[in-house]
Length: 167
Image (cartoon, rainbow, N blue to C red; front, side, top):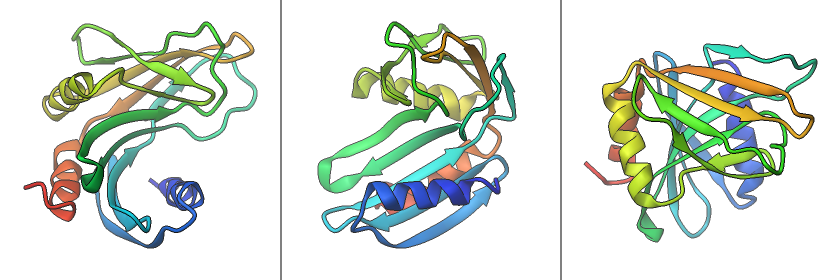
């Protein structure tokens, strides 16, 4: 999870007023964090793929993230950072173990669940699952498959729940 430090920096730059990022812990393949962005206490957990496939020559870091923003009553928001800009017609999909693939909404280099019910379904599946597989297509037409281990997911999830008062 060395590159999760990059994610911390990225999250801070996305929330310019964020200060005092707290590392809640590393849990096998997942790390958990919290910070205050000036209007909300944000808690999130992140992981990087254990395996990435695709015929690309260069790609930025890839992350699977779950975020809580309690002041916005926003919990279990699942999103991915693809490490490239998605093709405008790309329909990224995530599959937890052998469950049905779930299509994600995409914008530039990120994708997320279509609604809070889908977020909740994904988190429930991830707590029980062993792997999440993300399929996507870059703006250059490169198809990618990223496999994330879910080992440590439940413990990281407990950590962000506790930090954001959602026990």
